[in-house]
Image 1: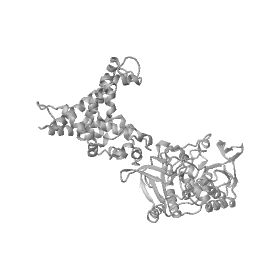
Image 2: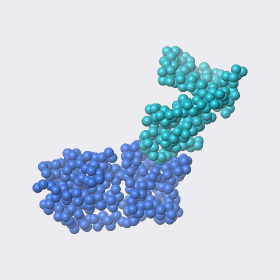
Image 3: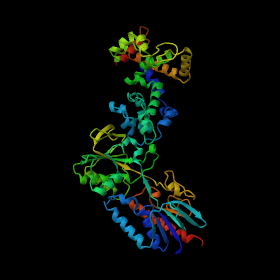
Image 4: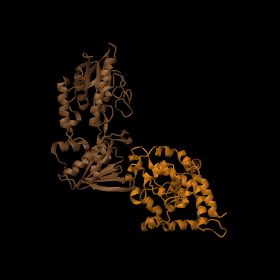
Length: 344
Length: 244
């Protein structure tokens, strides 16, 4: 097995974790990252749920593990094609670079939902409508949250399910991590600006993870975050740049209008942009949501529908950071089994 | 058997298989696939801002299949508040359309006679009598000659002047009132009117007019609005509805 070569596509946390585990098992591993740095989307993130820890620490430790285990990391290289070449795979990159591997692990991640598609929420039109990703970027860069007028917001509305569970944008699935992200960000705003009222507009609070519900309790009890069950129909900018929002308080059965200083849209996860390219020239397929399809959703989650090509992380479906890392490790086990069971 | 009892008996008979009758309407298939109670329809609904009206709860009631609750909806003012703007269709994340669900409920309320149980529902009679008659007589839903100032105070004082100088006013704004040839408010040809009548006949529109008339007569009798023979006096009933 030691002479086998695995190409890992994507240097986010899934790719880094899997690459380092495989290398420690004695495999030759090439980690191929399209950007100049590894770490992927976490490089823009300020704090992680549920423990408010720093993604930077996590990314750095994964980078160290990757380097120390002997992974060959290639930067600024985007794979556009995975083609079977006999028993091996040929990977082609944008600038004619080619890689050969005995197995491929696709850890190409997800795309953030483009909130301008939900035009009625005014993202890109109104300065005080931002996304959860913008919130993290601002917090990381400036450590504070200001309205476009430069003032401290007194009222913030956090909108759940933007680009998720919505047939109108073609995404009927739940992105799963947005509810807890919204609660985390609500708490952060409340800690930073104790006089600021924060409202979460949700349909169902899907707090599936360990410790997620206690964060919800903390948000209500300690931070007085208000949760309103209703989906936003639209947002409109007023003359003073505040935002008027409309929803139904479905638990009261009453239509509701509210004026807030800022709106944060919890944008969901979509299949990665490169997914459609990567499934050409091989037998990989996508599931009904457009994510990479597993050979078996229970017992072969990390196996694609093409033998020899494996998957890890959010290329399979939306998942949180800890699940992504666990999922990457489970992919390595499947790859090792693949080599062990293969006839020479 | 008293008329009220007869009405009740007929009503309970007509109320059988409500769910099946709702589902038989293709508009329900289009309008209600599965509702997840998010309330975005109520949030966008103009009627919900003015009335005690919640399209989400209507969708949920129909989805529940609860016979009593559906029957109560058919007899309520609620289903008549919708202005059919279909804004709900543009927003629903499940591609439902409460506006279409309302259409189906209204039709069933008309067919079963449930509409005479509510004030807003009883207005169906006035609508058939005015717009319903206009469309067949003139080919227009609203025709200036039918907007008599005495019965249309909502038109305001200027309307009286327009009404009295109708032909001059319409000619002055470039319309061709009751004239042959092209132009706004032109006369609709007898051939086209005949065709329109045929469409109403074949599509069941005329039958619906009759059904609404029939149940409205029963309501008039129930209210004691009768002539010397004990028959429904629909002029009295019209006045009753206008003052209700």
